[in-house]
Image 1 (cartoon, rainbow, N blue to C red):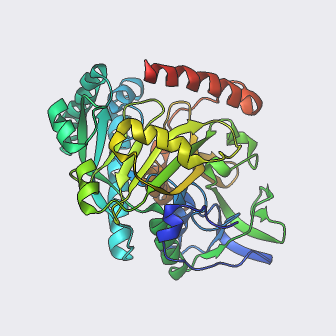
Image 2 (image 1 turned 90 degrees about the vertical axis):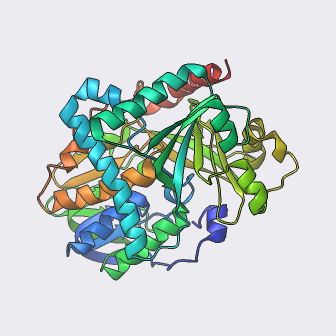
Image 3 (image 1 turned 45 degrees about the vertical axis):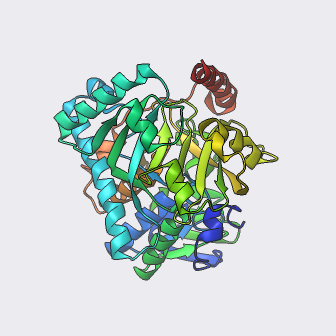
Amino acid sequence: MELADSYYAATAPAGERHPALAGRETADVCVVGAGFTGISAALHLAERGYSVVVLEAARVGWGASGRNGGQVGSGVRESMGAFERSAGRSRAEALWALCEEAKVVIAERIARHRIRCDWRPGNLLASTRERYMGWIESEAEFCHRRFGYRGYRMLSRREMREEVASDCYVGGRMDEGGGHLHPLRFVLGMAAAAVRAGARVFEGSRVEGIRWGSPSQVSTAHGVVEAEYVVLAGNAYLGRLEPRIESRIMPIVNHVLATEPLGERRACSLIRSGACVHATKFVVDYYRCTADHRLLFGGGETWTDRPLHDPGAFVRRYMLRVFPQLADVRIDHAWSGRLAITMNRLPHVGRLAPNGFFAHGFSGHGVALTQIAGKLIAEAVAGTAERFDVLAGLRHRAFPGGARLRHPLLVLGMFYYALRDKL
């Protein structure tokens, strides 16, 4: 299973090809999934001296980690003020600290392993309605007052229009502590670092079953890994491998395009600072300019596994609502892929008896949060679980209807919120 035919695959280095699992391997830890979460955990574990085997059904970065918008923001999808009201001040402060550390981990990985992933600072939340501006500003003030965060800066309608060449927005909030990167280059760079640290990566090795025990046995079509610990990092591609956590996440399909190169002047005219942008819509638009001056735009979601016949035409409609001046521009790449959301849009992280860990459902904030999740899993395996328990203690409800009915119920809910976006 090759990488999606995306802009990222076209502009990333080939990366090392890893063999399929054949026969029996033993390890301290077996990681299932070679995306952001799995590779982050593998790298942190290998650096601590653990023997690690990573099993990937397709290729490193094949799923959401190699196809996403590449945006890095602060905090989580939920309002931190609302989270404090429901969970308490100490939990909110601990969660925010981990989110900030996630950004530090990204910067450290890029610098230490010399990963050329086109990092650029700036993450802009664009408000489509006046009624959202009060919430956006109060959240910025709350994060400054409670956590001392100084990265948020409010933009008026005029300032927003100067920043983004679109009439869709009434204002916004710049996050100068956020930014964006080339996600496939980033995950491939981390995988190479993990291999140098001693991790063994097997591609084309879909996990067909786990026999939990001490040790556990993780089976593929042609081999078995025997390990003291198992880390599940399949996210939206988990399938029915582990029924105990399946109903806490919902896979949805996102669609992205990349235009032809626009040239530096035209690209800068769209987003003056070069920040990435996402809008205050339930079905969110997100976009940024790439290092070679294309517009990369994600918009619209579908709630079925059936592929779109023409994802480029599907997303182009959303792009032209924001930037009608791009009607003459050619679409060079378009692709789709799954991500996983949770009911409360907080990551679902925890343990599985007797010796398992999992992390998934990052709900659009996965570029950063997967990095801290992998680090905390490594800490927990090493016997220090206090920080891991901050994420593991987040409360989650199963999606209504269970595994069978959650998709039709989600479609109804998404239709309602999509209609609210339009109204």
